[in-house]
Amino acid sequence: MTTQKTGSTQAVSDQIRHRIQESGRRFHANDNISEFILPGELEQLQCEVEDKFKHVLESLVIDIESDHNTQETARRIAKMYLTEVFRGRYLPQPAVTQFPNAERLNELMIIGPITVRSTCSHHFCPIMGKLWIGVMPNDQAKLIGLSKYARVAEWIMSRPQIQEEAVVQLADLITEKVQPDGVAIVMEATHYCMSWRGVKDPDSKMINSVMRGVFLEDPALRSEFLALMRGSAGR
Picture 1 (cartoon, rainbow, N blue to C red):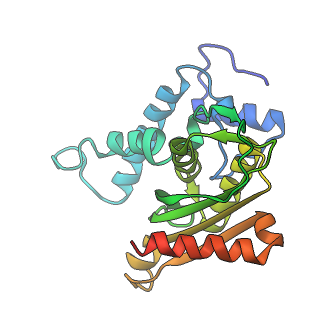
Picture 2 (cartoon, rainbow, N blue to C red):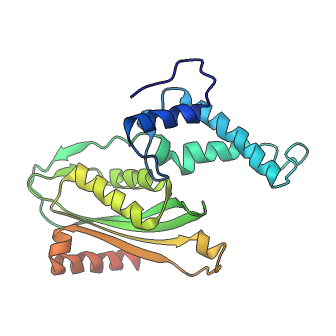
Picture 3 (tube, one colour):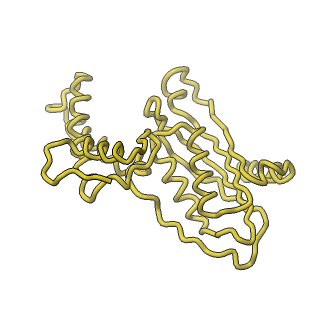
């Protein structure tokens, strides 16, 4: 991976983009690009985003000089995107400690509901919802702490996303970390691109699922997961 010389007048976003392109990797909205960001560059990127958001506000004909409500808006937006709502794009994956399955657990585990917050990559409107994770371990599976499921879910969701792709990314990550016989994920969320704009339907929700391994192959196990999930949802 190549880097730019210190002191370059090239925008830091261009330097990061150049590294990604040199590596042959993609940088879609829901990709994590943290490995291409050098120490100190995230702060520089935040300053660059702030400056560009000032121009966006000016193009919206908002007086950011004398309006006390918007004088710091560009700075707040830049900080929010890079360190909060899109942190899963710019920060490395949280540490996930794995433990051997010493007791050879092989019964269904369900984690949830986990509250999730994301952003629609089409309109940058919030996605707010919850998800359930089902895991079927085996003798060779790794175990991770319950809180780690919530942490990796938050890391995946904190990017510009579409719900259909987000649950696939989460299923891939849990499969990689746990190596179970099966993974099941169900997500239910409100999309503000439908409730806040567009059709403006406040009651519309999207529910989707990903089934892997034995959850896909065994209808009885899949039914058990969905029944237990619905039971927890109704509490």
